[in-house]
Length: 163
Image 1 (cartoon, rainbow, N blue to C red):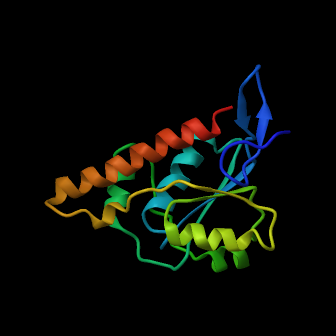
Image 2 (image 1 turned 180 degrees about the horizontal axis):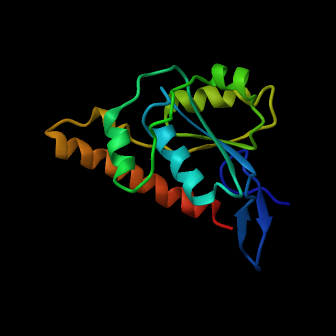
Image 3 (image 1 turned 60 degrees about the horizontal axis):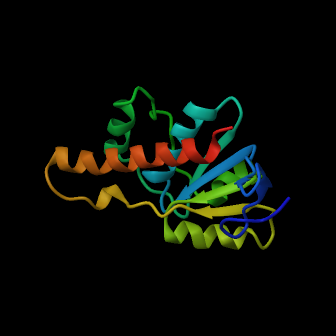
């Protein structure tokens, strides 16, 4: 095995001159409050790869559910109604932190995930993702910001986890 790509990510030898990162069996998506980016990423990953990938989500702190997230996910036929925001500490207490990979979607989540690598054998990838809750304008303009984040996350997840 060789190492290419971001620190903490493994690459497998492929055809001459190419490498690809190893596909993990479990992934944790993290953002600031576990209400926008990480739940979106988690439900998309479960929908796309749920039979072959265990998926979790958590935040640095716990926030309140965002109705725009639910609306953006409803538009593509998925259901986030059962999502309850949780912190990394709550996840660790309830499920443990037996993840192969943590994908962080915000700077504060990335810093917190890097702290985990001191005591856990976890790889960390940082996917800088804008916070659509900061968008202003009318309802449709704000929804467009959520749709953009949703669609970008879906594209990255497909690219990262395809077999």
